[in-house]
Length: 278
Image: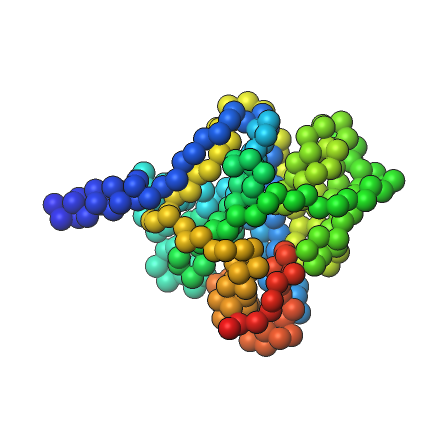
């Protein structure tokens, strides 16, 4: 027991040294979205996860809600993390339920002025890239519909290999939205690409008792910095799509495997990168 306690203290100390917490400003709004991703387009199998958009006056952060909570818990209360893990994955269960959900990507926009940083773990190692913040070029449409009691207007864009449809609220003049879908004259409540491979739907808006906007990462070491977005996406392509991502997802959720990746037609939200596995 003594050695286990020493191991736990060492584990926490090492992780505390590696965490990155850089608060920039107070938050004025937080939006929770359900992100749905079709991981097997042949059989239309999908998974969903909760995402959080936290907005300040000049900066935003967008992250997987459960993953942020789980990473923080792993550092601050390892015993509780293990207890939750065991309860979610009892002995003999065939389907694995990750404590932090499925989504892994963190996005920090304009925490450093004019830059967007994206970070996630790829095959167990943390990687990041930084790019100049670039909003999609939107075309406003006349169509409207009601979402969560708000009258929303439709806008479309062709952004990095996908056609996106977004519904925004003109009455809430905050030009933010999920992921990189920002720059409209109002907050985006729903968005999806034209094939419905990726969908975001707001499920809650909050303005009280918010944590600050900034960079918050709880990794075992600082992320390796990749030189560009294309390098990051190509690495993801090599590790997951060419590395049996679809069949792995099917096994993870207890579905029959889909081994023919060339027919699965799965790809990332941004498709404008070299699709080679070298």
